[in-house]
Image 1 (cartoon, rainbow, N blue to C red):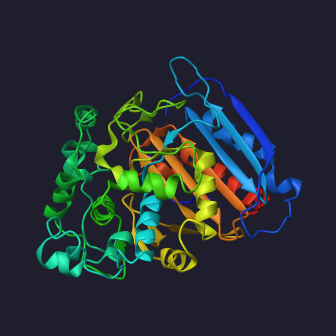
Image 2: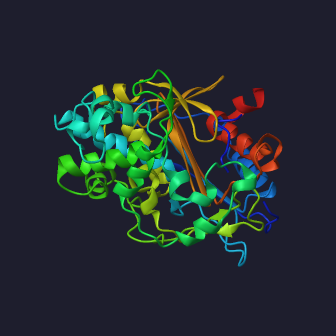
Image 3: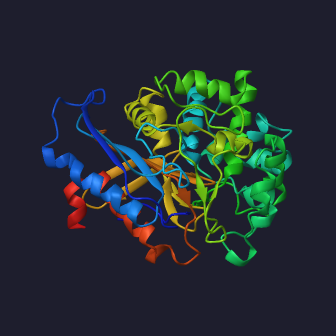
Length: 410
């Protein structure tokens, strides 16, 4: 079962698997019905994680919830040199999952009347998006990627410009920028200077991190504090998330895995990028979290307890969007919609940064959730993903986590 094509080996140590099952409160408004034992088959989930590790993933960990029951598991290693095992409660760079947090913060300001979804972004940020673009691009277009603004990343990391074209890829700029602190304005300027991906407000969007850096600057203008501070106070703390936050520097605080980047086969063996200054993505992909926190956040969000029901309906109005990996996704305002045949409709987001990948999805009834983290990215050369053992094993794990026994039926 393929959720979306991975952006993302090498032989690693023998599998280490830790699993727990615990009772958990059902989402607000859900009935007190508990899943049958086969609704959360812990043996199958452990086996799927072990299979992903055997396929070449150094470490994988996650949390699956079903009708109030919770399973947390891990397989593999957090450090390929020492053999230190991964644990289910480790903190992780969750990449573009951050976009849902940023979108929720923006919608809170919409509810307060400080931001209008269909107002031109130039009304708020005339210095960052001047002229005709500022008049034509709305806040909604930033949120659902229909602004026509291209992604800045290929221009901020020039040696990987044109990725994922393997012959032009180099790790040189990744290493040069490990400790660099980017300013949002300089990254936004790179996106605005590049050729547009389309006209503002088109029926099909093009995924762009430039949009979410602009939303961070919008939050700062209307709240009088940094976007990171606002999101921390009004989204993260309000949701009761204890292990989620924006790093202040290049290091991840607390227990975490090393994060290995293969750069489409260029780095062999893959290189650890767990120490990295995330100022190059901030409100687009800068958060650190745990899989438990992510499941809690999405359960509350989709139950109307982070933003109101009307705001949630706006967030769930989707359009087709071209993702950076070449796939087409259904995207709303910071939320991705995934329809899994035989299992239902799920909402959430995927995320990747150098060396770290995350997928978090919650079924629309709130009764089934999956958050899974991996510590190796871009393990296969372009065109090899569909046949690579890691891709097949990751797809199998996602299927088991989302659908249980239904995954075996296709």
